[in-house]
Amino acid sequence: MTSGLDSSLRGKVAIVGIGLSPVGSVPGQSPLALTATAAKHALADCGLTRKDIDGVLSGSAIASPFHRFSVAFSEYFGLAPTFSNTLQASGATAATMFNIAAAAIHGGLAETVLVAAGDSMLTGMTPDLALRALTESRDQQYEMPFGIPVANTFAMTAHRHMKEFGTTPEQLAQVAVTQRRHAARTPGAQQTAPITIEDVLSSKLVTTPYHKLDCSLISDGAAAFVLTSAERAQALGIEKPVFILGGGECYTHEHIFLMPSLTTTGAVQSSRRAYRMAGCAPKDIDVAGVYDCFTGTVIMMLEDLGFCPKGEGGRFVADGHTTYGGQIPSNTHGGLLSFAHSGIPGSLFHFHEVIAQLRGQCGERQVAGAELGLVHSLGGGFATHATTILGTEATL
Amino acid sequence: MITPEEARRKPEPSPDADSAALWKGLRDGKLLLQHCKACGHVQYYQQAICRRCGSDDLVHRAASGHGTVHSFSIVHRAPGPAFKDDVPYAVLLVELDEGPRMISTYTGGKPDDVTFDMRVRLVCEPISDTISLPRFKRA
Image (cartoon, rainbow over all chains, first blue to last red; front, side, top):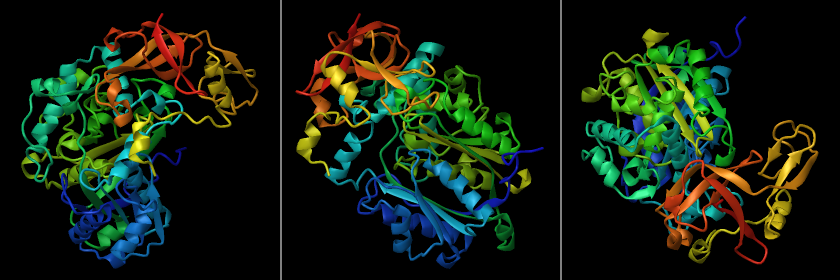
């Protein structure tokens, strides 16, 4: 007897088109304009046109006045979808978009879904929007009166991880150093100048234990993807479809003070569900996109996603296991720390990279023989978690 | 929409139906926790039902005011103009002796003095006529 989790979505839906806008500092481009650029590239990538799209999933954009971003984008892009929504799970939204798009296509709500999001947090924020983002991000009664920045919630978890497991500032810094090296090989990445552990530790303190270079970037940028059924992908003659093999989510709390454990997160449950649906284990994954809003976030996620035992994430990174030749090359585009972080699209960049890796299109960044990939998106001080496992045709 | 003037003021909690008793208690120098009469669960975040068992039979009892520092982070870059003059300050995740955890800030000493598992004690600091914030000092 198998539950619906075991294989219901595995291999049923393919990602056939991927596209990015320019990222980093892209002045004069609204979130809608950036998203349209990425969507054009995604359609061109698979040879489909706007007429082929009947579903649109998006995430909200801080620098856009439109609350129903997917609806505003559909109008802007000349679409009238019969399936659409603007999802909100903070940083986890990216993976939820893929999981929900897959379920919608498999369930018959849509045939071909455009997953697309863009934001211009670096150059497009009006002073009013910037102030609102700063002051309304946490609970107005229980958190904000104490002056708790968003970074602070992540900082307290990393700090506790250091206390419980002996994780060091140097190990945190190594995450940033490794990913900067990856970004140097990624065309268009926002930050490519090499950095050392010393550079990270001597950059300005933001909120202990995090320095400026432990924190992700603030960027403009968009990403878009075209998803359709495996049958349609085959009928279209798509050359290198990448399949969704498994998805999972978990939401353990809203407030940081109600997080069950500061050092073990909902990523455990969300990834276990995804592995189970995909029928694989952490050791089978060839390349990963691990949400990296801060350096310590990566260390904790490597543990919770099952790539190394609890408490050993710091050593795992220091030993080179997240780069080429290691156990799980991760964030090979540079991640939120060095490629770009434009809010909700930030983790879509992880998807873009992992899909490009599985297609074998990453040139000098290519992870040899990559067939199985995982992306984990999270947000809200570890409140939201979503995992997606992707694979090539050979993995079906 | 928020104005720059508003952003320079520290956010002051606006009590709602769920939290009115908590803020009134703090003004009187007491931290009121919700105790579930059905299952014994104790919660700080004020709501109409017990998060553990779903019962709505909750009673308020004043906390002892004692706790330990479960984690902390010293803020060097303020979240907005209102907190600029305060940095560096230590944000605490305090575990109360009754069980619940809460966000607070350290008072009555230097932020660098804060350590893990440090014993702390509640101080209700008035910030307006109606609102006092629950902060903690070294016990």
